[in-house]
Structures are given as structure tokens and as C-alpha cells.
Image 1 (cartoon, helix red, strand yellow):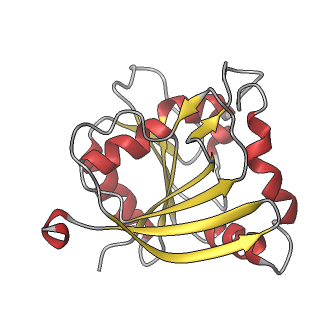
Image 2 (cartoon, one colour; image 1 turned 180 degrees about the vertical axis):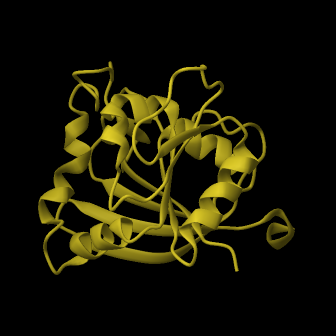
Image 3 (cartoon, rainbow, N blue to C red; image 1 turned 90 degrees about the vertical axis):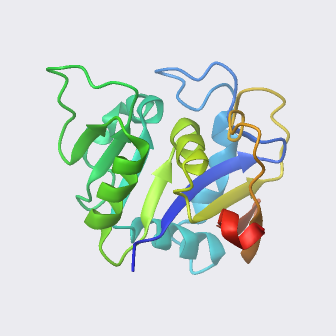
Length: 194
């Protein structure tokens, strides 16, 4: 059985994953850090601690190029030395990503490599661009949305460029914690939605 590809993303109630003007030095945009206050409880025995431990138990990471660069390329190691597949439009010759990271230009190939590398563990997805590309290609199985009760009003949206087709989701888990609701959705395949 293939590994589950799961998007992990903190998001405001109005759909933003970063505040406006996200750039190096202000990676989460203005006021975007608000979306990650729940991580203060990541070492707890509560729901946020559980979700955080699950995220770190993943066997591979797929990241969008922009996220990868804003994160300082994670210095080549996102967590525990797992492979990092950076989905990008192009990989420049001579630009070798550090450590366990590699550039991949094809969405399907990226998903295949990450699933194979993860073995029986899930694959973690980071970044709006990667998430949208993988959703359009039918490659995301689940989405773990850390819904934060705030309206950012502006910034980078998670689901801006999905195209015209709608995607059906099934809520399979809901965990409430201080300042966040962790929602896990399973993505219905086209044949399941028909």
C-alpha cells in the first residue's frame, strides 16, 4: 500500500497561511506568526502535542520551492534526516539543495518518489503551491488543517489556484485545543465522488 500524502498547514479562518508581505526576514508575513501560537503546546500531552508528534513521524517531506527557500532550505534537514522533495518549476544546474533535499520538477514523479521513500509512514506536504499542484494532480490523500480563530484579512491563501474542479472532502478527525482546531480531511477520489 502506498504511503499517505498528507498536507499539514496552519490556516486562518479566512484561508490565509501567511500574512501579507511574506519574504526572507519576514517568512510568515506581517502578523502571520499568529497562526503558529498553537505550537506553544507542541510538547504537551494534549491534541496539539499529538498532532505535532504525528507530523514529526512522517517519513518524507514534499515542499514547494518558495516555502523551501523562505525556510532557509531547512539547512537540508526538516526532521530526522527524512528526504525532502522540493517541487519546483525548474532546477538550475549547479544549484544543489543541501542535505536530504532534492529538486523535482514533475508533480507525479515527486509524489511517487516521496511515497517510496516514506515506506509505511505518511508523507508531509508544506506550502500552498505544492499543495495546490498535488491536489490538482490527485496526489494528496489527506489534509491536516490547523484552523486558527483569526481573520488575517490579507496574505497568502492556501487554496487560491486549484482550477475549476471542486474537490470533495470527508472530515475524519477533529481535535480541539487552546487557540486551534486540528481538522483532518480525507480527499475523495473522483470515482468516490461520482
